[in-house]
Length: 565
Image 1 (cartoon, helix red, strand yellow):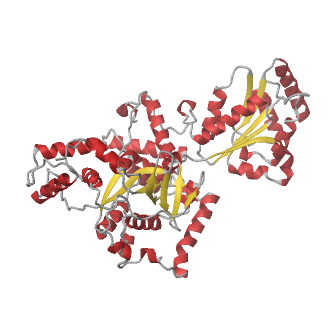
Image 2 (spheres, helix red, strand yellow):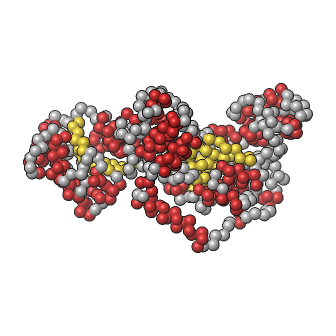
Image 3 (tube, one colour):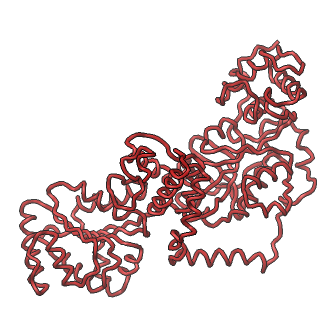
């Protein structure tokens, strides 16, 4: 319907296991590596599991297509068979006589076929998809088939692919002999946010035969929240989003288009099955219990977050210092467990702790009115919380680089697998090898590798900054004249002595601004908006500003390129 409109050769998000569209996430790469390793080493049994819609069948098709001519394959994709029917199906796939009325004759014919292939140095593989549907009787029959062997090697390698129920079934006591023969196991996981975005782009590029982005950065988090990183649900959401965009005559899927498409799907019950798996029901019960606990137990607010004057707040502007005096607590390293950590957080509590944490980094005791908790929009919550504490919020999207250049702590938005609302942590420090985040139920300090952090980061962030000299508006577009004068005074203070103090935004002032923009790697246009104000304030040594990376004053003076009188 919409293929010609978007320039696609076909719909990129069809619900068919087309190997051409296979996107290898880290989990899928590991699964494929396990399969190839098992085949090359002659392992008897291999088990691959994954939730509904994680791409198991597509992975199987891609694996089979890559096998060389020395491998014979029997692919069973409808395993709702009894043991005799399964033997007939296997023989039929291998083009072996399959009409015998008893298991012995069928196995004898299969054994002769396998011995002949082995004598010609060929391998034989039996791959059973949807293997969770196999009965225990049939699984026992498969164990007996694995006894077909020579003195040196197995004649038949068996790969079982299925939903997590397969593992539960194989853990049964009566199947312990089969379980002991499984030499390799792998469980496919859902995609991270970063992988979801790459998956969508990959399929669009395959369908359009060129590299292009049909989704805006605001659309990706919405699709991820809906799908939980499950490829099948991603396909459903993206296909509906393209259809909605086509109806609106829009060539790109925006955040609002994605949101409307997802609303339609939920109204039709397209994602109902996501809520009623065992794991999600258990998670839901735990979540409801957690929500009920505050009504049962009295909760004391830590004194760190109580309002009122403290020694820290009183000395806010009296101690010149390039860095905030707030010291990070003990650092917790959680390699490979970041998704679990995020999954234990809630939207409202994490955003409250994040905004309090980032304000405290400025040596100020946070003051957050309780009514703000009723605000559903997270961006509005952060903006109003910042205003209450005499700060500004700068939203940024999909760009860690700009956060590094502005060199200020930021609140990062994360999307745990399966969650429908974001979680928030505060970025307090960053190096080339380490990301330090703070937050969580105990306001912990976490150390992560950049790749692990970015795999769950939605790309959205909120930078807290302070307008020390009250330079209002965007200079020179809509700013009052007093803001221009304040800017000029500030520029003179940081070394631009040639600037004349008046309320005219002249060429000399613009050139100074452009030098600073170029130095800090932000857009060079001579216009003083929030980002430019931040980098200018960062230049003034007397201001107490927390930074996420070291600020070397001597290097700043050398690189400034300003002639001082």
